Length: 236
Image (cartoon, rainbow, N blue to C red):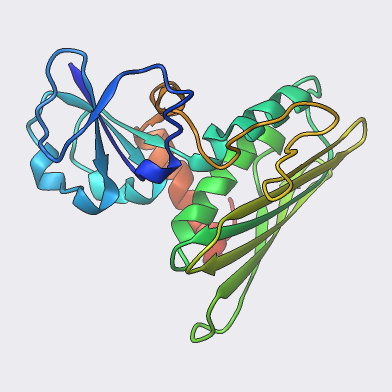
């Protein structure tokens, strides 16, 4: 069974990718072949009935209902800097502190990005119980969203998003009891006290294939839960 990966080619770091893959608009993988298809060319109707494993970004998770063997990936989770941060924090059984993140994203305001980030961050610092949302006026561009998140257990999050027509950036800071971890993609020195990443806002094809989550009922319920939080609902 072959793999079909849907995504943005500019995000794939081909230098660090070991998996061989082809770029084609024809969905006809042979054997264990991996094929890449740009998001703009994705058509659910072309996938149905094909004997393939499908890997889609989180914003397409809702549009893949009814398809079999679908996995969902979240870009924040795949970035090398984030993997290093997880390594730095994994020694803490339940991290307590303040998490701050700022993201500038190349697209229109999209709740799926924030929903995906909440999913990824919840596995790192705890399940969010409350989210306060502040949005800039819809007619103003670029648009901004600020999330204040209670992750429980004494951990708070402050997440800022700017949705603009150009430029991408991620700033990440964890201030915990035992450690402080910082990253800024513009500084190109993403993780202190040590470690450098040459392409901090790209990831390998291997990371997608190994890090994607099965689009089962549990995953879809989690995403719906975070969607409800962003829309003013609470967890019960």
